[in-house]
Length: 515
Image 1 (cartoon, one colour):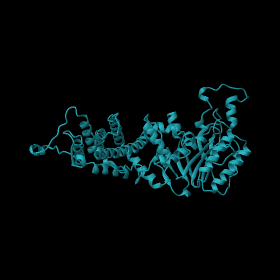
Image 2 (image 1 turned 180 degrees about the vertical axis):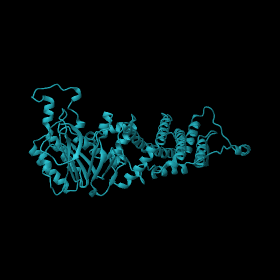
Image 3 (image 1 turned 180 degrees about the horizontal axis):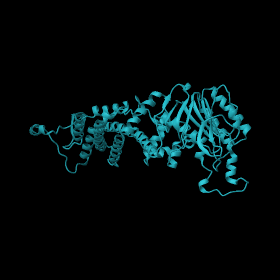
Image 4 (image 1 turned 90 degrees about the vertical axis):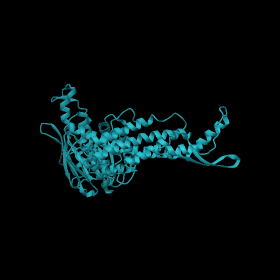
């Protein structure tokens, strides 16, 4: 049995797709804030969403398949919450049935498996009825296929039949075994006979009891006889124990898979509701498998910044027919890094089948998403900032391949403008020649200006600054200019005459989300 809410035709595991650079992605794109919003304090949902978002899909068909399921989940939120709660409660109840006894004892394994199966069958019965009620309002192939399968495979007749078999396997009137006398009067050819205890067989049993038969009763102190009987009992139910235990494991595997896939869509619901509550827009993107399509977005914003500040962040728009290389330059603290994070977040969210934080968003499906952000120096660094940047860059080069999208944030700014620009230019050219796409935030205007009229037809964005120095935090399509207006910050701190002025907490300049 397959759930198939994340994948149409396979039981692919999210763990198989976790990228080598997942820690850098989480740190650079502030993904933990997003995962926390999706989890709503549920550690299991957090883990599932983390694995699923980072495990980017590479094919458009599966992305669109998940989008349809996510739309159904958002439109039928009670359905997802009820099923997830049903599974959580069933798993918690099943855990109470585990005995602190060696699983080598077939009898205890059998009784434990029966108890667990009854709990999960009860849960599946409830899920079946939830799905039956919701089926007319569901449109996605994933949900319709799942509930149709559960309704057909676990109908009332089947559940009733299995329940009766499980009750019989508790052997309320003892264990019936059929066998043959072998060498040394030993019993061979064990065959377990499950008694039929239906009421309509009662008279037949009474007649059977009156038939001639041989019995042997163990004396009270016959320890060796009791041991031999216990061994006969164990050997009699061993095969049945294995079969029932395996059945319980199969049902548990299905329940676990259903819980995992429901947890992801529950996370999508939680984040969707959070953004709507804050007045922020969200939409389902259009993934492109043709790298020539470019990048188009409207109202794109940083999800994590919106969640941290409890208000909708400033959105940006772009129509880039050629997105091989996008440079983002302009005023300090004007929103350049914020836009870069928003682009990275949207790319990841799109490629895991989610909605994105924008009015609309369309770009190609990257073979890998990679970040190279500047790092602040700290005591844990065993080398200089520039050496540390080069080390990370070397690891990226070892792992990238054509079709990757790379996000650079003030890379190589730990050295001087001339050296940093030359190094960045060589790396950019090599990557563009290998078919990769780049978004590069930099205050090295010499670097950006060197690409004006370049054969790769770069797109230039610039953080907007009004004439009075006000930052709008919009990033517009415009060529780079030879200043980042650092003097604005100097004046804010030291004043017009160079006198030091007090900076109030509300004027705190250290804000990585608006850099």
